[in-house]
Image (cartoon, rainbow, N blue to C red; front, top):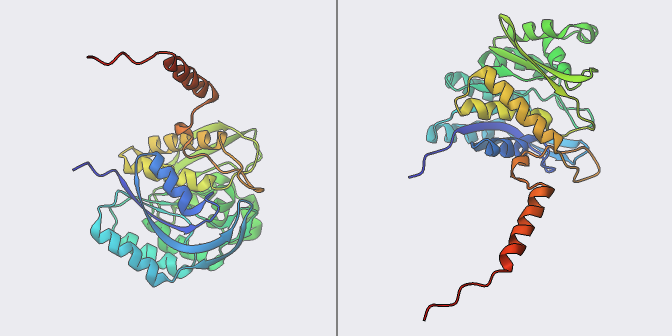
Length: 293
């Protein structure tokens, strides 16, 4: 029997464009050698430009989807994206409390695409109180970090990211990775925090364009690395490198945003294709040896 690859249980919404949500998670985790166990939390109507509408799956169905899998398969990591409703969040939090030894990676999804709001104050509050205490690492961008750190809109605009990270950590998680993709800086600066302060800071070339599913790719890549047994600081570094490469080779299948190429490593470059053609052409010049009599 072949060995089972690392397994990751994923709670997220279905995105028909394949840019974010479950498809982003599945492709990213598959690229890192993991087997994804997808739990659908919501159905969305969207394209590569943004979300038109979404419909949360009933929380009992979310619970049943996950419980059946957890009773059947050993899980190496849990990744949570868009939860769809407060009821779904509560179900996921209860599951996380029942399986405290499985590392949980939380991508807080509060908006998508063109900035459509997918959450409210009640859901954000529930995330702080119910889910973050069971989370190993939260991976917000700077806007999401400030929303999690404060209910005051005026304070949210001014709160330093270091302070925002510490407030999130006070909710009970072990680490916070704040992505600087939305900051107005020459380079993208991503910082990993623990309760002792900054753990590591990484800088990346800021790529042009707008990307659909970058956050899902990063969080899932961290989950995949952890599922493979990589330590947290190295997992965060490896996940950033993978995400940057996927973004640097993104494609634009529609009229909206670019979609990260999570399978960039499997594509042949123009030079490789030319070499393959030349090799095939050279081989065609040789006739097969005569058949032995």
